[in-house]
Image 1 (cartoon, rainbow, N blue to C red):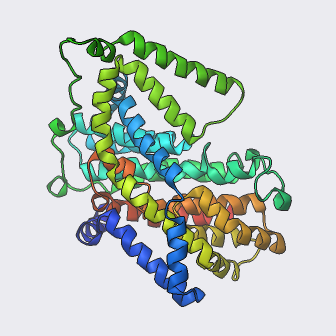
Image 2 (spheres, one colour):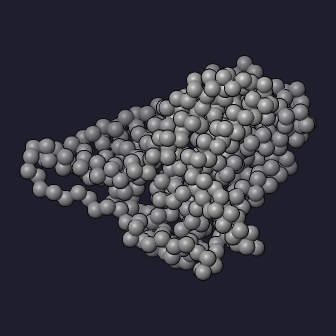
Image 3 (cartoon, rainbow, N blue to C red):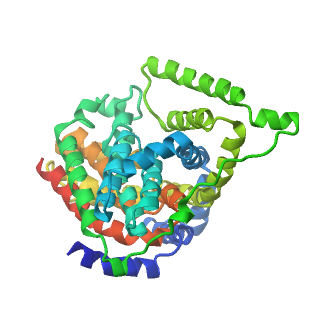
Amino acid sequence: MLERAAKPLVKLVERYLPDPYIFVLILSLVVFGCAILLEGSTPLEMIGYWGDGFWGLLTFSMQMLLVLVTGFMLASTPLVKRLLAGIARLATTPGQAILLVTLVSLMASWINWGFGLVVGALFARALARIIKVDYRLLIASAYSGFIVWHGGLAGSVPLTIATPGHFTEAQIGVIGTGDTIFSWFNLIIVALMFITVPLINRAMMPKEQDSVYVDPALLQDPEPHKGESLRPADHLENSRILAWLVGIGGLAYLFQYFMSSKGLNLNIVNFLFLFLAILLHGTPRRLLDCLNEAIKGGAGIVIQFPFYAGIMAVMVQSGLAQSISEGFVAIATAGTLPFWSFLSAGVVNIFVPSGGGQWAVQAPVMLPAAQALGADIPRVAMAVAWGDAWTNLLQPFWALPALAIAGLKAKDIMGYCLIQLLITGVIIGLGLLLL
């Protein structure tokens, strides 16, 4: 049934979904229009908000580019390629490949969202080299595991409100992860995602005549650089000692960092990926050759993220994001506020695709409402987190690193993601209402 339901959606999306760059341009115009019509802002004000915020995600953009580049370099080392290939051999049929890649992506995303995005796509490539399986669904399955990230160890919202000195501490205090990430209702929703998301992907697997396959030869990584060392510079570029000294220095810092009980964040994940890649590639020359391949997939990140920063600025400064949230809150009760918070977060996430940024937008609306209605504040906070993660299945912003690694476009996978969006939305929404 799901295969039949997915087929027209896949064709519809392939035909009408534009490149993510076109999507962000259209989205910018839609936000401009809504802010002018609904909030009474003038076009000049919109231009000002947009231009002032356009470069607001430069640090984040570089972090995301490094997620792609360092993850690609690490996965291209001989050791990691052998490891991924070994796990891939556990699957012997196309259906098993779909289930396995989804589970690996879910586990990796629950640990850390950046880790999950890269590992899922790279593992999918490893599977596609040895099993003939629809490549579009394989990559969509790898990306679908990303849905659990905000209910996992690196969730922006629960980690923010668990940090002393956070911007709403005076209002709600410090809420530990035992009430959010490790609460029974959140763990049950996560467990349901681990069960249903792989099964949904497996049920959408198209018939052989409708499948799209990839030539395994196109997924082979380039051979490491081999050249004669004629100059002193060549000796340095092929020096294992130089790579080992720098790589071990980086790992020594990481050991010191984790021994001081500090947690994972995006910078540390990138740092770990980079220095492991330096060590495992063996020589600077091999690392640089791999870097040249990895950087080719980063063009979408470089050009699109500034536009999303501008959209976020317009949404926040014009009051449009607050109006969307308030509209949902107006019809809520203490028991239903988490559900409406989830839906409103899903809508806002389409325009503000940043977990931390979204909480900054919605917390000033949702927290007073929760206090006034007597709702469970940790549950409301996690509802916002799940809403942010949920509509990432629709918003191509976060798919860019995975698509770059896979060599696909958003239109190739979003038809399958829409089915996941509909089914997981029902499950998460009911979980927040009933658990």
